[in-house]
Image (tube, rainbow, N blue to C red; front, top):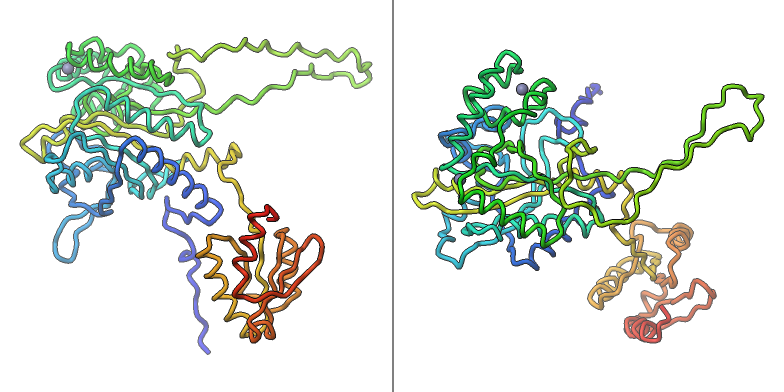
Length: 475
Ligand SMILES: [Zn+2]
Ligand SMILES: [Zn+2]
C-alpha cells in the first residue's frame, strides 16, 4: 500500500487566524448576547452586511489610504469583479443605509452589528487577521447626544461585563472648515523637523500629515509632544460640538481624557474621535521586605517597609491628567463621520459610531479570571440502556426540552457503569434509568441520588412528576 504523505502544515490555521474552541466561544457568546441586549434597550437594531464588498467602496479618492494600501484582502473574482473582505464595519453600513433608502426612515437610524472583519495585520498581542467586533452606528444625527449615546452604550457593555476600569480618550478632528487650517499648521511644524522623522512619517508628511500623530516610533512620539493641537484651531461649531460631548460624558460620569493628539487610523472621521483603554487594576502590593544579606541575622532585624499609603476613597477624577498611566490596550474606538457619505451620495449624511474588539475583551476576561458566566448544572440525568432504551430516550429528551426542563444525557455511552460515573461527576439530584424492559413497558425508573430511593413511573407522567417536584421545591 502506498504511504500517504501527511502535510503537517495543513493542521494549522492561516497566520493571524485561529479556532475559537468551546471554552473560549462561551465567552464570545456571552459578550455578544450582553452587548446586543444593551444596544437593543437603547434602540439599536441589528444589521448584517456581507463579508465581501466591492473594493472600490473602501478606496474613494482622498486620504483614506493606509488600510487600503497595506491591510485589505482584495482579489478579483472569476467574473472580473474586484472584491475585498470587509476591513471595518462603518463603510458597509453607510453603503447599506444609502442602498436601501434608510434616509427616508425616521432619523437617526440606529444599528448594531457583530461579526468578523479582516485586515492583514502583523500578528501581535491582541491583533488577528480575522477579528471580531461588536459595533454601533447612529446615522442621520448631527447632535452631540448621538456621540454620547454611542460612547455610553459601549462603556455600559464594558461595565456589565465586569470591565469597569476604562478611560475614554477623546479628541476632535474638526471638520472641512477648520481641519485644513490645522493640517497646514501641522505640516509647518513637522517640516521643520523632517530630519528627525521615521521613514514612514516622511512619507505621511506628503500623503496625510494627521497620521504622523499616530506613529508608534519612539522618536516620532517625542516630536508629537510639542505638535500643535486640533482644539486650538477648531472653528466655533466644532468647539461647541466637542464641549457638548463632554457635558454629556460628565453627566453620565464616564471617565474620559482629552487626548489632543488622538487621530485614529481611519481617515473619514470628523469632529469626535475616541478610543477606550482598559486600565488593568494594579495588583495590591505586599509590604516589601528588605533583602536579607546575612542569613545569620536575627529574624527581628529584617526590616519591613511600611505598606504604601492607600489614598482615601474619593470618586475617580473625571480627567486623567497624564497619558503615562499603564494604558495602551485599546478595547474599543470610534468617531463621527459626517463627511463619509460624501463619496457615496450627493447628500451629506451625519453619523457617529464605534466598535468594541471582542478578541481583546475575551482575552482580558480570561486573563483576569473574571467570572462572567454562571455555570448551570443539570439536576436530572437520563441513563439509557439497550437499543430501544436509547431510541425512547431521544423522545423523552425532546419532551423535557419542550417543557423547558434541562436534562443531561450521554447517548453515545452504552454501559450502565460509564453513565453512572458521569451522573456522579455531575452531582445531579435525580437519575432516570430507561432500560430495555422500561422502554417496552412504557415506564422509567426515577432515582433520588441523595437517598438512593427509587421508583418506577409511567413515562407519560414523567414531566408532571418533575413539575410537581419543582412546585414543592424538591429540585
Ligand atoms: Zn513616525
Ligand atoms: Zn470646524
